[in-house]
Structures are given as C-alpha cells and as structure tokens.
Length: 345
Image (cartoon, rainbow, N blue to C red; front, side, top):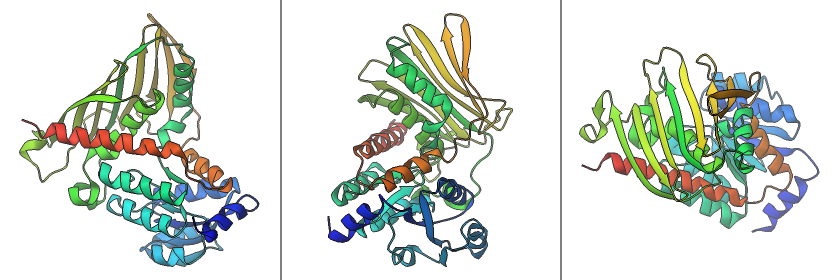
C-alpha cells in the first residue's frame, strides 16, 4: 500500500473520517444522515447529478462541497466514500475509489454478477481497504436475536430455513427493469437480502445445490429472456444438510405493503423474524417450541442506518480490509446460480 493511504488510516484514528457521498436520493441521504449523527464522520463533499437532491442533502451537511461526479469527490483527500448510485455503476465506481486509496460503503448489490463482486473484493484486498455493503436487515434487532440463538445452538441442528420478501410495489426507476443496468429483477433487488440473511446467520456454509423458478409477468423467465423477473422461488441445499427455501417478488397482490419473513427450524426449536402488519420497518422475533410461541423482540427499532454506522466505526479504527468481505462473493455466486438454474430446460 502506498504511504498516502497508510497516513490516511493513521489520521482516521484521531479525527472524524473525511467522507464523500456519491448519490443522495432518499436512501443515500438517509445513510449520510445516520453516519453524521454518530459524529464519527465529516461530510466533505456530496455528488449527485440532480440539483434538487444536492440541495436537499446540503441541509444535513451545510459545510460539504457540492460536486457532480466521483472524480470531483476523489479530489478532496477522502478517507471513505458512500455510493448510492444505480446498480450498473457500483462495481466500477467502488474499484475506482479503492484504487484511489479510499474505503467504500456501497448500496446493494455490490455488483451485477459474481464476477463483478469478486473483482471488487480483490481490489479491496489488494489495497488493504475497507469495503461495506448496505445489507441492512442483518442489523435489525430481530436478526441479531436470531443470530445469537443460532450461535448458542438453542435450536439444535438447523434443518430448514424459509425466507420471504414480497413487495406489493415495484421499483420506480426505469433502469431496474433493464437487465444490463440492474443485473436482474426481484432476486438481485430483494432476494440478495434473503440469501445474505440465511448464509450469514448460519456462518456461511457451503451451498451444495441451487434450483429456481423465475417468472416475469406470469411467464417463465426462460420464455422472456429480455425481461427481468418479478417473482422468484429458489431452493438451496447446504453442506450442513439444511434446506433453504426463499421467495421474493415485486407487485405481488399480498394484501399489505410487504411480507418479510426469515424462519429457522431446528431439532430443538424454531425462531423467526416477521414484519408487523405489512410494515417495511417493524419486526418481531418469535421463538417456537412445539406449539408454543414466545416473542423475544419487537418495535420500535431504529435499524435502517446501522450497517452504515457500523462501517463508519470500522473506518475511524483504520479502514483496513476486513476478511468478512470475502462472503460478499458467496452471496453473489448464489445469485448467479439462481439465474442459471432458471434458464435450464
């Protein structure tokens, strides 16, 4: 690593991290505000092609410089950059920042394919720089409780995992429906969270097999290769013997805004994270023993910015490469296998 990057990391231990924000739509601005609230980071510069978005973000960071693109951001001697741009740009922009000696926190997906994600992880490892991805559901209190129960082996041998993310709405940006720009449909948009939750909670076991069925407006995706899927089901068989089933969709007639569920079943009990009354934000943790159910946690829980603030804490501690990032490739490889399975006759 060059001396400039090493010096940045030393300085970051004794002052707020100098961070630039690339893309400040709703989610980008929310993550910026969450980071600023910790006092761990300083918003040095903000980039967005929309003057309206820039001006809205500037209200939260009035001293930040307002610029138009990543190149202008990187001119400000940053410790880190937060990327919330369209998916097609994530891998390339992240690698450019890493090559410039800047750590990165990126919206999901980190790349449209496992090849792109592997390239990013390799670049971060080579530069010895921190990368983080906004896999935010890990940071809900509900999933924290589930992770703890699994680590304590309170469920016995886990044999089945069922995960669901049905969104009664769909993305409002046209690029989501262009496979070249998005990488896919509801699987890479919503299913990425489900795959991550299952593998993360179970300490990333090897995935032995993947089968899937993907639909676009009711037709098998194999019959409409130019479209992106709006409904998906997939089954993963893990090296532990556990079977993971996941389902996700856009614009499903679900009777509520969304259905989000992550359930883990073992020989000694079960546990689930479930959303409350169709909420995108409120969750309960339920523990199952036979026919009995005990609620372990519930709202309120301000979890939305926790992935971002966790990255900020790592950044001010030095911003070095974290080997946990290797697992980003594991999730991306499963997504690739889901898409490949759906194309098989």
